[in-house]
Image (spheres, rainbow, N blue to C red):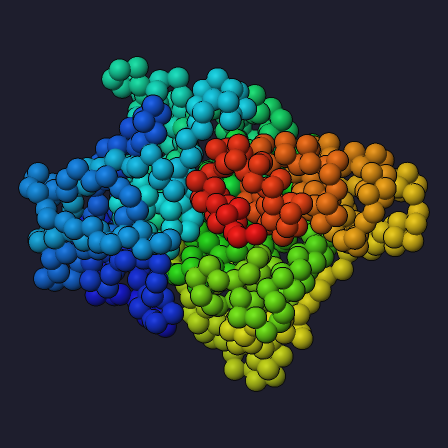
Length: 619
């Protein structure tokens, strides 16, 4: 049985849906939130906000429905820089509140004396530098004519524009009315009730949204811009700036097939529509799995569908992460590891076993890279369950996926798939912990089989550093062929002797990342001349090439690197490149600082803030 706050759930009025449970085990305590949900919790958020591009603020009200223990007279919310005008009950009576001291990466507690009120109205404005919001001038959009706004909530940024309990374990339903300039469109991660908007005052339009499923609050997402829509299938489509729409739709035209494949694997898609929003290049992630509306980076648009596995990944989150959510960020592998495994299964169903094997083999490469980068297999940051945000690199993704794949290989795919489908059904719209998952696994898959328990090494996978010796490594024939060409090149074969014309992104990554880090200027020049690496339209290939060039102090690449870092804001690429430059001492540090001085304004606030600490490290 999963412990939950049944007392509060039982107190809900009969006319309202029963709120998602709150887990009460020690593992479920969220140290990155000030909320005290065992006393009083938010069950629904209703937003009524206006986007002001001139002041870069969202302003209006958030009406919160509260479920509280009998006699509870206060609720603690999460706040990060909100400018609060007043807090009242629904009759307009002022409610006393205090904002506590701010804590780095956590914000401040907003404590409201609610008395007997169980619905409160917060009138407020977001700060111009709200960490979740990026306000782009027209010059940083594809169309260059209108500004753009988008939010990024994960992990703890939504408290900078929504006064609620910003913890993944406190699931909430929500609704919204968003008022924007009449020439623009607002979209959110919810049912779009007025897709074209309705007239509002002063040359504005008002858009309405509703999310009837309780979701972790980091999944409330908003974007406003010059957007158009194109269907991709009966229940799928894409939003993008008009200048990007046709290209994005052509690249992502398999999206409906992915939804069908995912549903066949692990149960029905429960969110209605699955649409994609193609964002400007400053979006800090490959994709963000906001329900009904994945936010995606244009770096995946390479013309050959090499990188549409990003969409498979974000779609898979509709089950792992959105449907069943890590209760705290110490267990983010339950979100990302499950999804990376599920993504690979979608890729296999749509594109075949060899494509899936290629992606899984690269995932293994990345796993080995991060195990090494963390400081070795005994480093605490290589654990799956650990400190919030304390896992090194992409270990949550790749070690987590390898764990699940290892179970699959041991028990058999049919048995494993049946278990996973039942797992998503049992825990739908609920939070989860590592301990809860392992308990469910033992109860519903292992059934007391001592030999199987020993073989799987569950606790070692979940709680210990490093990689257990039963880990399954999927090997790709495609990448094995690349390894042969890599060996020939290392032995001195000229670059022009290697035909790369039909290589996928994954083949390029295997080749470039497999090269010895020490290369001569002449060899680097030969590679760039033969293969056009500095001019590659693929952000992935560019990243691998620039990483190699930086490690060799290769000056001819700097102008192309400068352009790259001014046009791409995805953290997966920009963080390692800046770190690589800084690590190169007197050669790289001036380059990093010069580029960052003008590129900073193009990055999402969370990326820019993180890069500040990288760039300003002492020499």
